[in-house]
Image (cartoon, rainbow, N blue to C red; front, side, top):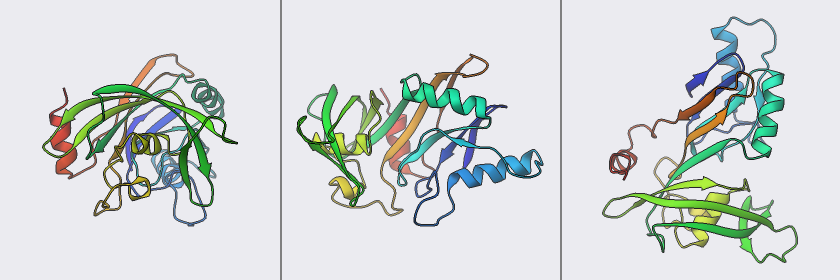
Length: 226
């Protein structure tokens, strides 16, 4: 865990692939508890530490996670996320080139709870939810492409599912059609930046995540960003 922004109301950390944001059936230590412990030790707080989870990142994904340190910030951030006032930008590496250098993808997704996977279906399918994202190719290497993705909606596995449906599964993402896994079990998806108006101070907050450490492919593509 790496803290990239902190004030009295908010803490933003860079999550490593493999970490879970909130506790689940695996029983593994979640990022939320690690952050609580960090706050408790840094500020020598007695008793329980308040920390509000306002959004999540899939376990194999790298990048920024925003937490609320006060109930006031939690209430306001929840509303901002719900109303699309928090702007998140993702970077994804794919082996296949998209059909166009940039585009808008609109699909209808159905989540399969048992498989923990989403599928593109027709609009008329029961429980189908509209999923919209914008993508743009921002760098190429000999074998890979770096896409910048902006979510217009927030659906389960949305980027992973929509890019795979376009014929561009994310590198390492076996669940959505990648041919091989990454050695560390990660997928090449990074929650790269987040921008919003601070819910209490009203300042403009823009934060960028570091690249996955010691990863030559990420470093090569990032250095070639258009």
